[in-house]
Amino acid sequence: MAGIGIDVANDTRSRVTRRLMPFLFLLYVVAYIDRINVSFASLQMTGELGFSDAVYGFGSGIFFVGYMLLGIPGAILVEKWSARRMVATTMIVWGGVASLTGFIHTAREFYAMRLLLGVTEAGFFPGIITYLGHWYRPQDRAKAVAMFMAAIPASQVIAAPLSAAIMKAGWFGLSGWRWLLILEGAPAVVCGIVCLFYLTDRPAQAHWLSAEQREWLVEQMNRARAVTAERAGGTWKSILAAASHRNVLLLGIAYFGGAVGNYGLGLWMPKMLQRLGGLSAAETSLLSAIPSTFAIPAMLLWGRRSDRTGERRWHTAGPRIVSACALALTTLAVMRVPGTVALFAVASAGLLASYPTIWSMPGSFLSPTEAAASIGMINCFGNLGGFVGPYAIGWLSSRTGGYSGGLWSMAGAVFVSGLVVLLVRLPRRKMS
Image (cartoon, rainbow, N blue to C red; front, side, top):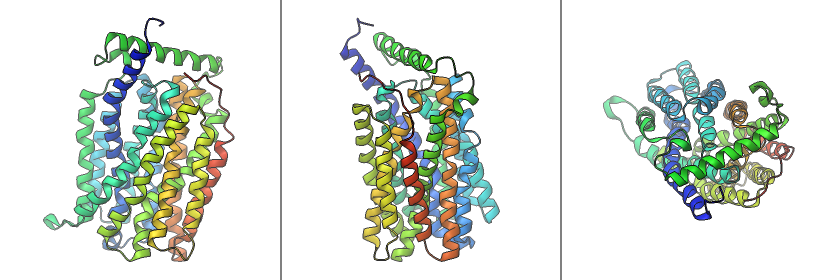
């Protein structure tokens, strides 16, 4: 494609980002709020329904048991069928389930709805990661994933004041935490409907690009596919073979450890701060937003730096090791609310900054279909850590009366995950 210049390449990448990224970012904000809003609801819910820390920890974490069931099919559907239809269907269904969670009364109902929410949302994240691979070259993907995954801390910043405001409601005799869950499920349904009209499955179908831009992007994606197919060398004959690749297994273990810390902290931070400072539900919700504000620039800058240098493993391992140290330091008895919030900010920034680089790895050594399957597998297995982290904190808290044991378990899991990433072997690539 010698006739297509640098200006066309830059204009195409910018146009793709302007068209897709704000909308995908919004979708993930909605998804993540529905995933973690139970952490804010718990400030009222556990007392009203008489749930112990163990019950809350199990219920918040069981989401990820359901989540692991459909992750691989979701990624493959995006690769083989349609991202537009798969994402739309997923969001409409999970939005309904998220809203219905506001009507629970017993622990069993809590467990059932959280499990069902995980099942219905399972295909979304691996599907979007696969979808980004249709639009971004391998050397651009860490930055793209960083922009998308910046929705995680952004959703926490948005959810905190929103939840604090909604929990003051008592309309029609329903508690504020119920309205929180009911209302925050509705945007997923609306976004799912919009997906059907807004998303484009493949670059060749992108009529919002000029003919020259489409030509350049299709050629780049075909070239990337050819490279990964060549690296596969004909040895990747099945999804099972891809899922059993040494690197995929290591990334699954690493993602598991990171999820223990990320979701353990995300789902328990409000209750930890509430107990430490004796704060109200509204005060605690607002305070919980502070750590996430530091994670947003950390993700964007770190993903950009990884793309610029071409290095992935240390860009994943380094932030996780720093995060583990911060989590360990929060167990010190001398820590009060300001110091704890500061350490939670460091821990959150380290955990989240490592995600864009870890998700850019599978596409560098697997063909597109194999990468889609492996992304689903890594996400499914790794997110079991999303069950283990919250549940371990609740279990240990119910038996010890404090959160130190849970914090140490998170720190250990995150530290090991950083070391495991360093064992991944990646092919060298030319920077362009």
